[in-house]
Length: 169
Image (tube, rainbow, N blue to C red; front, side, top):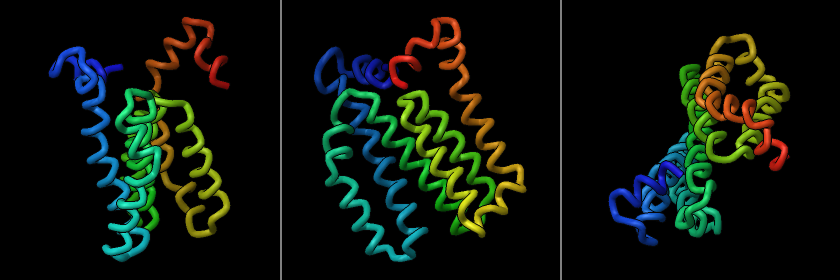
């Protein structure tokens, strides 16, 4: 809703104003996919191909042009994957903070972001090399950041009988 409001503030209550944020958000989403693919594949040509395929999917080509909760969710998910790629490939503990911010913003957009967190927890448990992160403070600090960003939603839910959670789950 905030993204739609920003677009309509700039360009009026028009289809372009409503969809502007999705068009703009396609840029950072593509960048996050490209950077994650570059880190994981270690090949700029294949990373470019990953971005092309990402932008050709229905989710990217249609949802980023529609005014739905999917548009910020896609960007947050791409950012989350990028920061996890930094964790894995660069051994950068601070990247957990970026993953936490991305997760919190993703949760504000769409609750399905919980699946990214669940998948990450499974990765940490099942991957022998990744398990060492469970002994460091970084993933926990990232989780605290995600929770802090998502806290206003939880506060609202608690005051409204958890209606959105009941509907979604």
